[in-house]
Image 1 (cartoon, rainbow, N blue to C red):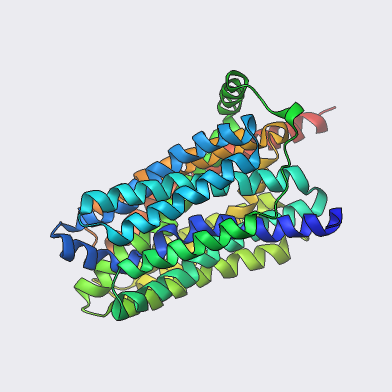
Image 2 (image 1 turned 90 degrees about the vertical axis):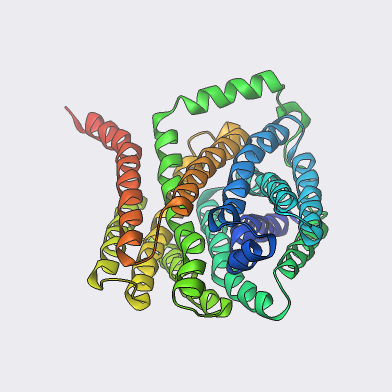
Length: 398
């Protein structure tokens, strides 16, 4: 391929790799009640399969980030995809909740490679305005998974059972592994780091206040996005007595709202500053947190409307914060992407664990969850944007 065509190939493949993290939870989310019933475990234990995945995902991004910077991008990607395939097959055959937890941990650890390498490949191969467009495509791919995956997973649960969702995971992982064989190594040997130097890079990145604020902001975003996938299956199936496919339809609507926000962001980014779009996303988050309170008890229409507004706002916010963060340390793309993803996943895992333990039985409880996450995200965004405003003020001073 010519350099231009190869750049297009990378721009197309990177979102597909990133989408694996988007479907890693949502495809099997409608099956959580069925998994709990089959293994005879309480609700919180079944929901903990999500928390285990996110925690392993955080660790995997650090491990594969080191591999990406010290050994090369492809030497991190191929083992990760192979591990994801193995974890998917283990889940298909898991005879106990403990082995299912192990399989989910394997999957979570493995998708760390996909996200780290997808971002690093873009930094290595794409520049200029096309880079910012490519980051939007990353967010679109991540958002498309939650749109389609739970809808598909709900019907798979009804027609074939929860194990077949993991068959689909295995098939998609195998397709990505085959497609990745066309990639070229983009980290020359001369730029590869020793592990000691790479760890020093992590320390340098972690010392950046703006970097930490960005990770916290997107950790809150992830927790908000996961809130419906953690609590929704039980509200729809147990509290309202509806089938898994009905939850899948609600998750389709919620995910479509995020996708719509991301698509709108793609159009607006040429006319408005990223900071303004981030603040607009926060405003929509606040409106979505308040909307469920318009109806008492458990009212699905008002609750889903609030979820959709929250997700729409995150669609405006997410890719702009990612782009700002990736450009903070372009010389340490692997370390930056992996540490950023790790911190984001730790926040998301903590949020999903708290939501799983919370007694969410109606609109007011979900509104309270969103309000708490909004406060965290607003504080983090203030820390992310404040340094740049101060720098601008200093330049404007006589």
